[in-house]
Length: 393
Ligand SMILES: *Cc1c(COP(=O)(O)O)cnc(C)c1O
Image (cartoon, rainbow, N blue to C red; front, side, top):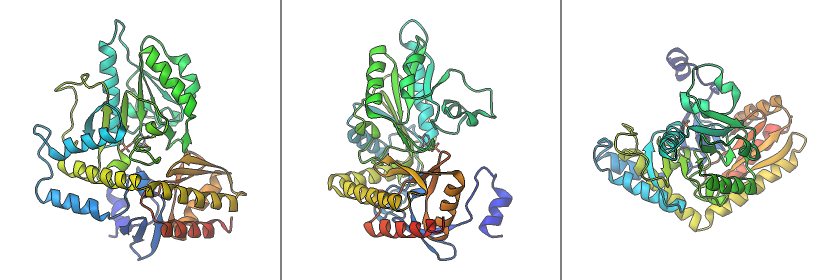
């Protein structure tokens, strides 16, 4: 049986897979099982932030796993402690980290911190967490409920209580009450359709929450790790959240989730844990990814790449205004709003045939999450292939 046949027979059909199998990659390039070449504008949904088969990451992790991969969190783990230091230092916040294995798990940790803080803070038990209608926070039972998009709650109930959805940032205030412990937001909604929040609205909300003694949780699972040009989108928005979650781009493809918080004393021994979380493999990868991207950012190359990519995207948008209504996004988290869903599907499928991989977000957004290390040549080639993909539409 080939891969597709094996997959059909043995893997649960939770993904609407595109019929392609990649076998190797190099930075923003991918090669499929037929030897066909592609430019990757998806980086595995914002995960392979330093590109495919990154030599520095591969060398760091192979060196590490030739000594140790896992010992458990019962013992000290050098790369975990170092990764925590690098993450905290890069953020500019006075925080501590907990390591899990995914974005959903990082958000579970954030919710547990907020709930435990809410139990001990003041006389009334605070447990309510306000999230946004168009949000996406993960696939576990609790993070599905934390996700505001109604279609996510079709099955799987009963759910944990205490999640309330605001239409948008400006309507959060009217939902705050004495039982509210936290507000959880993405600064740029990813799965919801590449939707950046308004900076001044976010700053007003952050200020209001500080005054009211309510926590601000920022889900940076997609926006974190230099995706927006700075280490965190919170740095771009110039706010100081109480809790931040990270995952996707931080491990360069190795599974990792992080919740970091300034509430350093809320969780104590036994309150939370993870068997795999923060092991030698994933935290070694994270240390190398953060080093690579910090250097890349400090040298000005990241900013250059962001400018070049956005100019190319702008040109593509201008050339094809009959198909699109708006260019959206920040840094290397970009999208084009497409006139209708059928056109969007056609673009994505033509793009694959023409050797460039792109994503869908929400109902009508063509989404771009290229590796941050993508070269100018790769950007040019990708958009050339994309022009071919829309010429008949
Ligand atoms: C992808 C994503 C998640 C879920 O991450 P997993 O690693 O799939 O659990 C949570 N929040 C945001 C904003 C995401 O983009």
